[in-house]
Length: 205
Image (tube, rainbow, N blue to C red):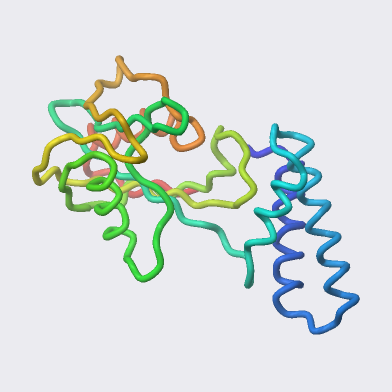
């Protein structure tokens, strides 16, 4: 479960973002900017980032605040799961990332797999829809939903990219160090459970 301070900061940002989008009053804009600054101060007080850096990040968002969507591809081969190594932190994760506008969730995950691993794949089943705040990830400013798709491996060869510099298949009892901002050990274990029980319904929350 997410800490209360993160919930407060995300709620304050959502209020400020909506207010700055729809208000026509100059004084109200200043009030919403002050609320947004408080959200940045809360986040900075519990992370290594500066208030100004977080405030600039929050100010880039506009419109009514809704959860962001993160898609992850789940590919199995010989009882092992496909993981990629992130250049950003040197740790491993399921291939994936933020969903893009004008692409369906399945198109997004198939593209991410190709771009991060060099493998072509087809999404065949939605295994899980998780609220990131309900799982033991480190905090980020954005409320996020995570979509995990079982994908069929269609071909390709492993490659290194601008974002990743490692590709491999790993068994459940021999997982490498994970990038827990992107995926947790519990989520990987749950994907193996789905692999062993293909008739299970989609997880949610």
